[in-house]
Length: 504
Picture (tube, rainbow, N blue to C red):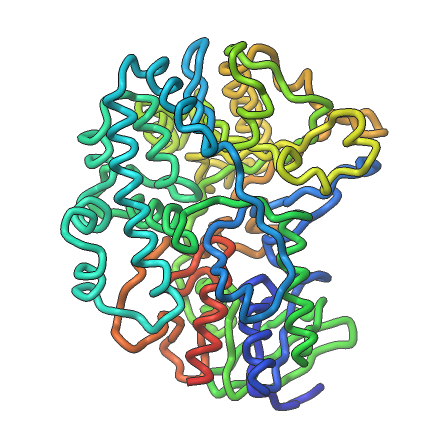
């Protein structure tokens, strides 16, 4: 392998690197993918997390919104993404707000019960009509060379531009909605994986909201059949079928701007050369490989994976738990609760009542459970906790993880009719089927600096015209991971764009 030459050497076998590899190999380029771990997929993987329990969990990333249908069609990958019938359920006292994609009347009745009238539903419809229009306009541009700010403003239109791109989304939501519960539901999309005050003038929360509502032109958050590993597996199959070489257990240890890449595997140290190097790693990691400094970002989430023996009972007897947990189940994410939790975390404390959201993959895709678990009524549950920045876990990672988990489970119990721990399945060894991952865990296990799931803060989807948003300071080196402009989420967009930049 020493000093072998390739048209492209891709550092990292996550889903974006696999997309780039598949496009380039299909175009006849000689491609080598180097993956540090013993498997491909990065954070888009499925795993049997609990010994003896036949459930394959999407251990890190868990839903798909941004993956363009064009990428799926171009690469001929066979992956099924199922739309969720229910968008969300948000407990509110002894009732709750159910957003039913299949029954507008039921959604209207739920809004009336929680908010006391029709005004909030009408405001909801107007707001999401605006974001749907933006999604339809902006999503196609994500697979094209960048347009500049003025062109994007003209494309989006005046009011949407002001409210989504210029004014803090927290101020906009406070003006458009009066109900604390409804405000919180809207704002959660601005805070997933993002530690920010939605009223901050830096507009980081606006950027996060934008990527959460424009996915593939619809903003739908879909369930990958077979789990997230099925997505990465299909992409790896497409790359290999096109002729790309994928090496696992190959850790890149140095990169030279001339195109030289040094990596280690079980057989020792090797050097390869690429006409182009595509970095599917966080910019801070690329900086380290180049021997340069790059500020480390800070992730801000607690991920909890569970297998339940049954769904928990709700306080609202009129809502079937299947409906409530099939979509996104919001937990203590009212507007005021989000603000309080942010202030506590910013002051260096684990929030007293952590905001979180859960959903049950197996309700939409039972295939991730073995037949015995399905017959017994077991379900998976994925929890994503907000406002859990890495700084909270630096001094005592294990102790802080346990404290954050206890607080989060107590927060869940606050909105249910019974403790969630009473519903946990027990593994054959007697342990409850529950695991928690903090930003520090992601840093240590997945190599993400700060545990930041987007590699760094999300960027606006516009920039220097004619560029692809993947360029670096070095001509031969391109970003093809989530840290590229228009990166973040399970999308394949940076991989596509890096391949197009190379091919053009």
